[in-house]
Length: 485
Figure (spheres, rainbow, N blue to C red):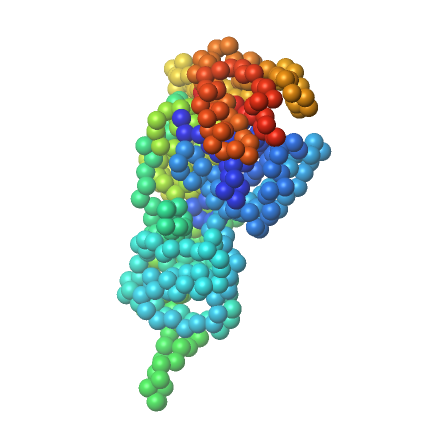
């Protein structure tokens, strides 16, 4: 099983097998369309509370060898019990730290992103720099023309000039060479796991926002250009529309939706579209989404990788097969967001793209689905019990902790003194030390003599308790036990 750890400025801040470095919360929220975040909490007696400096410290979360989060703390605070909590944002937010000066650009789409990243990298330290990776978003003509007369934040410039006009997603990959920024039309990763009703799907929440619905759309394209008497190209305030290819109408509408909720108008601009025919196709595609409103489908799941299974986990920015007949879910969907609590995996959720999901509307269909749900529950009780056991196993795994017990003095003042140090292992509040093999226990000494420490460590492997004498301490030394479960 891959172990989850947290590092602050390269130093270990949390490890599940070190009780001294215990924390109370580590929840990562991944968002394919925005900046990921981390909520981190630690008790008042954590030895490195003061080592986290908001907007400065680099916080890295690893699961096994994979980096699952890298970023910085935005704020810190404490509660009644003096538990400290930090809200953190991922390294993609570094693009908020720089400004793009006024510019004029004409050329391929990838070149504009290269320009933005180059300006950003020149203005920040090494830690905040990016390497431009894969760019799969394309322009029909592979030629765009943009300009700005104002200073703009780099992230806003990328959003306004690229994401809003050409779509796509930003993705950060962590490599040996540095942080690689991809600009992707779509994601190509697919989870090896399957989310399935009656197996590892615990709950389904479907929310539909009707306030965002529209039944008629006026699409507008790029600003039209004219040529003056001297042959100079001038950009006018008039935009490309669909009147010439849509029977004289400058809008598209959905008749069925109009009968249901009436005329609701909206307008959208596609800055890069210069041909009316292309604008009409984009408008019809967009209207299909607008008539349905915004549908959010949140699934509470058991991620099999958290149970110790040797299988890749489920993350945002990848596709996963989801099957739940009672809810009309049957297909492969993009994981738009992922909420992952590394101390309480039973509460993990994913939000999938709602495209292609059929939602029942009439009471008759709802009743039929309820009947299906009852039948499936009746026939799959044992499978659901299996999920409960798996969740219990997860909860047990996350609460392993160690406790060092000293029988004798903790500070040696005179020669000839000694103490017995034991390492007890708990799962929740149950002492499981006796059930573990002695080979799991590895003792370490840290003093001013590193070579002697290495030799000392070699002689203190496979012991549940050890005897410490004044000969082990010299001037000053500390001891701890590593337990491999």
